[in-house]
Image 1: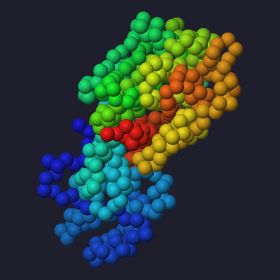
Image 2 (image 1 turned 90 degrees about the vertical axis):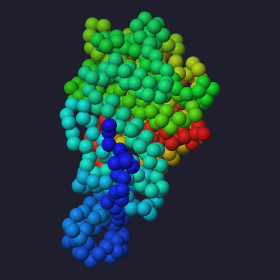
Image 3 (image 1 turned 120 degrees about the horizontal axis):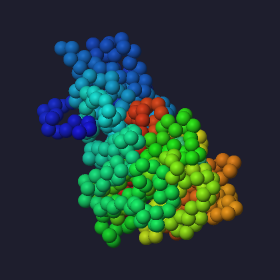
Amino acid sequence: MPPGFASLEDTAGQGGLPIALVPAASVEATLDGLSPRAARWARAHGFAGKLGQTLCLPGPEGDPARVLVGWGDAAARRRGRFHLAAALGKLPAGVYALNPGLDPADAAAEALGWLLESYRYDRYKKRAPAGARLLPPQGVDAAAVEHQAKAVWLTRDLINTPACDMGPAALEAALCALGARFGADTRVVSGSRLEDGFPMIHAVGQAAIQAPRLLELVWGTADAPKVTLVGKGVCFDTGGLDLKPAAAMGLMKKDMGGAANVMGLAQMIMAAALPVRLRVLVPAVENAVSAASFRPGDVLRARNGLTVEVNNTDAEGRLVLADALALASEEAPALILSMATLTGAARVALGPELPAMFTDDEALADEITAAGGSARDPVWRLPLWPGYETLIEPDIADLDNAPPGGMAGAITAALFLKRFVDETPFVHFDIYGWTPKAKPGRPLGGEAQAIRALMAMLEARFGA
Ligand code: BES
Ligand code: MN
Ligand code: ZN
């Protein structure tokens, strides 16, 4: 069981060691409110309220009595997301309570950050759990915060698991397990039905030992508004015959990060019993090299009839997503949302912290951007620039999966996906899915991006 808030049972009768978040500007006032000996201790340790600065104050018997955590100033706080999280690893084991009086939104965010920081990926190595535990802060919806954290943990676990243990079959098992927990229906398309119905998923995955497949989860009442999530499930991306160099291939276990993120989002939706009819589609493949690999120059016919010239087998994500998006759009849901570790260009443009968002729906873009701000889960919109449509149109087929020149690579990938969605409102996220350098609340490794923002948007749109 992953660590969460300290539960009511195991903390019965404990008040929790109080933690005060102290803005730099109120250090003097805070210290003046302490006993003279505690104030001397804090001054002797140079407590200045610097963001994340953590100081444990002793009580009369020398036991820890309270904790001061620096909260810096507004400008410093804007440079990060979760600040209390910086204290977690510095505190002795025990149960802590955040001082009341914080703005409830800040208290909720800091409590979430604490849980996100307490994540451990321990499948292959035992790692000590965080010894410091937090009581749910007053005025905070603890269940909602915990649902968010658990969704992020699921996403991280799926991404962190290497391809040897997270191939298409394991990803299938993970989606089925998720569905089973919430009474969802799950089904899998593979074999000749995949080849006939989803030719591009088949083409990309056909070289791998584990067969390609399309995973599907359906949950909720049939007449509720339909929300369909599509996630790129490339369990490992060698690049195919257009093989990636070693440095670019190293992290490609995370190429199912889109699938991992939509699964985290699906878990939040189902845990909150959001009144929608949820559908999750994951094309699960490995982009491998063998005599059966699809080739540069091959022309594929997509599910929706469009022909696609494969000008780079490493632009495989848009191929598998295209067939899944075509299926998604056949039932004209209220919203189609795709997530994918789709292009290196998105990473170059926005770096690992900001997922690129593409949509033609202005209201939707504004809602998600606003939700990202309050959820501390930022997104950044890039344009579906119509002027670049010609870039994805080659000579001998309808579409080119890898336009020459490499201009606007994230945009042309998103424009490619859009060709497979009919009238339905559509938003696509080109994510990185990985934290390359730990920050408070964001340990090194697989990362959820945009799903908390999306959940907030979905709750505002479809919530009861
Ligand atoms: N999975 C990669 C994109 C990727 C690379 C995401 C690194 C995050 C970090 C994708 O399948 C890919 O290889 N895209 C190519 C497309 C190109 C050949 C048109 C890319 O971005 O280089
Ligand atoms: Mn690729
Ligand atoms: Zn890929």
